[in-house]
Length: 496
Image (cartoon, one colour):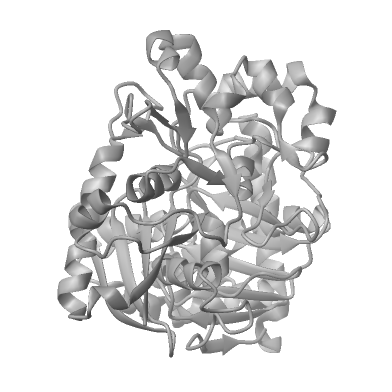
């Protein structure tokens, strides 16, 4: 018996075929090999063609089937995870009316800010746990105001994962978690946020019915089965945004558990049991994948845009011929604190944790007589950890507890310097796993199909490495963080 999971990212689509009995991947593939294009007609705009997503889903599915050589009748469930906060507008035939306005598009920032003021900050934070900000509802308002002909033809509004599921099943659906990521779920009343729809002038009919995250959400139609080269009738039993799903893939479901990633950007996603929010909107609260009205679970998300991109910039510009393993070795030779060298990794745009200030990436306290390339490499990794730690402190202000941090063994978490610094400065255990979003979608689908329970879904998932805080470096790490924080606060105050 097998479970098929799809991960619709910004750059590619990944598929994994998971063997249900032992929880091990039978096959995995990613497509395309080159990054999917992002269309940007104006500064701050970012769009993708939903039909291109579907084309790549079909291709990657065929590649996994070819690689695994399994009987497609043995595939018992499908799960989908996807890039969050995108807007897909479809007609009655579920065909896209325009390109999707994706997560990193910033055209609707002012629309969301104005709505926050007009609806009332207290009402938004109490009932939505967020400002409408630059999320899906605000993007739809932009379409309504600027493309009225397209808006008039909208049958349903979807998130990227909802669109892929609809292509498979013919059913336009979403989830409570999905509504919350669009800032369209009223946590106080535990229902869709009618007052947001009314404020923006949206008809409730254009929004999809919300189903349980883990549930029967439709079955493959004959047309979809033919295009995917799968059997008709396979149930789609799970869908979730990429960050809640990444937490699921790491078995982060309970209060006090934290999931982290550190690729181009850095994300920390924590689970809480109370509807708390950050009054300054520096971190965001959504319904987690296991949120129910009777037993709510909240996912608190912080994103630092400029994290691992600093490491890749250094490699491309300062370390010709070195790979990341060699860079990590050079960083490891330098003592904790990098000899006083400070790195701010904020070189990838405005930072929400800094209330949308963009301080830029920079090095401070460079001593030309003492500091070497190794110091730059270590200071960069420490600076990235400190930026994520700064966000974690904000999360803790909302009442979120940080006990155990789980991360995939990938990107920055493959560095001992990075992982040990993270554990020491946050005084937390870091568990590293070999898993990914597509595997998480498989496990979620297994739960939704009744193949797994929450207790059995993580069969085959074991920590590759557990890193405890090293008492020898806790004090120097904290001193370095204090010095880093002092410089950050000075720079941010100057940029405001």
